[in-house]
Image (cartoon, rainbow, N blue to C red; front, side):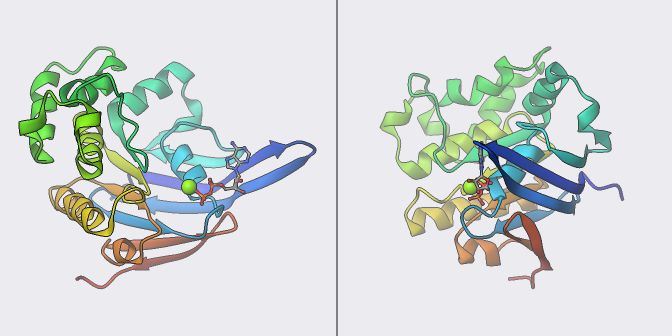
Length: 230
Ligand code: ADP
Ligand code: MG
């Protein structure tokens, strides 16, 4: 089987004043469709940098990234924007909802970047809001929701496009531990339904409950473990 994500010797250097920060150093990783992968590592070890590269939000300094067999480096900025809008779902620690938009409208946002727009997009929006259990909150604003509900909206927004891959950067980082467990449970349920997931976490509980755990340190990928089933 062909990997969904295939990165080889990926490096990312940031210029800082007269120096250079080596945020990623020769990272290689393959992720197959249907996997759920947790990524752990100390602050500053390069996790977010790797997520940005995988999400085509930034370009590597060197190395290769094939997404679903396609070499991302060969794409124009416009093609990359299309790829992000149609194939990658993002979930962030701080939810990143638009405060003036209600639940439905927030989930609609990725479709505004798709051209042409998915023909069934309205049905997809309603379905994915239902998948995260928020059908009764369609016309509420983010300020009227709890943290856990806001993260559910962000997950619905990520899912509505039927992405190849969902990237979540510390999705439980701003939630209390009980709510965090519920969000993790939702991710596990979605993975069982076939959603491919890569999730950065500081929470060992989350790390233990993904099928696979990769660890970063100082820009290197230092461990890649298949976990016992729980
Ligand atoms: P993590 O998500 O594991 O905490 P990051 O990927 O955010 O780590 O950061 C890795 C390293 O790269 C850190 O040393 C950080 O300071 C540096 N870094 C990240 N983004 C930038 C940037 N835009 N400009 C300069 N340095 C950066
Ligand atoms: Mg980070």
